[in-house]
Length: 273
Length: 325
Ligand SMILES: Nc1ncnc2c1ncn2[C@@H]1O[C@H](COP(=O)(O)OP(=O)(O)OP(=O)(O)O)[C@@H](O)[C@H]1O
Ligand SMILES: [Mg+2]
Image 1: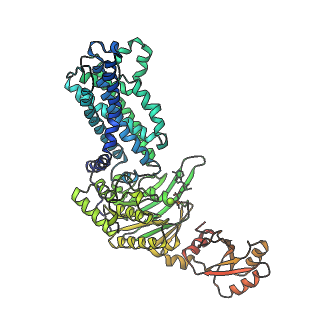
Image 2: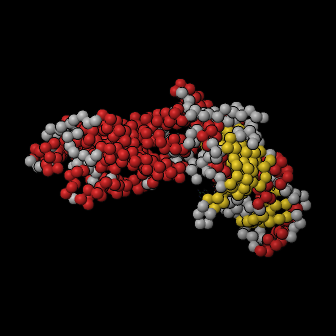
Image 3: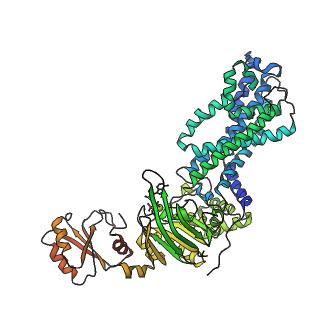
């Protein structure tokens, strides 16, 4: 009576692959939603600030931009918004539902891996979406402005660190919100968390320009979007002054690590008892 | 350490809180190869918690759980690889079609593309869902959803299948169809643990039944042996035109060999309300006549029903309570 069956233990990678295929299927079904979510906000901003305003003689942002031009300052900031919010919404909205009343997550929790693998797949998948969102938004942002956008090539090593770092950070924030916020409160989350992050995220001006308001300059350092904006600025528009690249990289990965540790504990708390 | 499909030793689960809830209060249970074991108990007995512990989703406060000799607490990934699970709630992936629910489940268990496709096609056929393969879960009936959940649970060919109240809310026909499916799966060599609060289900489907109440397993045996050893004669439902008063109760209790169990359940099987008493007696011989004579001076008799021993009367004999309350 010791005919012990061979358990199905494919190892972590095939399971990760299967989980990602499922998410990809759902994303392909909702591709229009993905595009709208990614493009809408950056497109409206660049259109109003870098196309409409110059034509009607509004000179917003002239002071902070120096001789780089406002559009040049704006482009990396808006890519940062696209990256960060794609990563967050890619996880937070669906996960909050799947962990809620429908318990749809259960079948994946029963996959033959540690539950952390299920959560990490979500982060990796969201990070990939975040990078795709950035790549989709960037060329469009370059087409719209009426004033020149002066892109440059930053340090390639820096790019290799900043881009995945920004994407992973956005996924980690999404996971943390998804395990914390109930589906009913998702709308509230947008006005309480997402909106302040956007407006105080060094998107419309370089962080250094906040010299004029020292208390705010310090306060916004808690905002993860600041590091994504500044990081992308260092990569895409090296002529615009940014905070030290190595501070940016350290904080991007440090923030990711801390949020991930919190979010994985939360994920286990929501799926195990 | 045993290589049995499932072995629970002194398993306890206490949920923290004020006051803390002891959902599982010390369970020992062995499930042997190829059997269908039923976990029969009323709401709140601890069935889902027990199944949760086996599936590694609930961490036991005390005790040991092994699945084919593998410790469920120490090595959840390996244990999950041998289990198929249908939870009490519908946990189908609402973003995926019926076919995709099976296909991606197979992928979560490491099956390749071709194997997963074949398996999903085959299961849809076998579980009579093929004509709804592209529907989404919210668009199908409860019976279909339940069949799909079982199809999904067995898609990776698990050695131990756990079903938590798989027929709750189904009509009698779908219920019997589901029993047939489960019996077929066992014939394929699967071991099955199924929880239920339907005594008919336990009786018809299971090789052995464990009766669970307040987080404890009271007895484990074949349905026949349970009825023989604990059936304690017959259950007599005395229907009256008005609720029984103290005088009726006293008169009935004086009849030799009769014990008053409870008032009749407020709602009968057919949904009508009824007044009267539920009694247990060693046998009907000589009892019924005396009983009628004893009741008549105090109340108007509406009807009198005698139930031969069922698992329900076993449950009543063991706990003094009704399974359906
Ligand atoms: N996560 C939890 N936290 C606190 N108490 C819990 C939790 N889960 C279950 N319980 C309690 O543990 C007891 C057993 O619950 P369980 O769900 O295991 O019963 P059950 O036999 O499956 O009942 P049902 O037939 O209603 O599904 C109940 O009193 C329940 O309220
Ligand atoms: Mg239950």
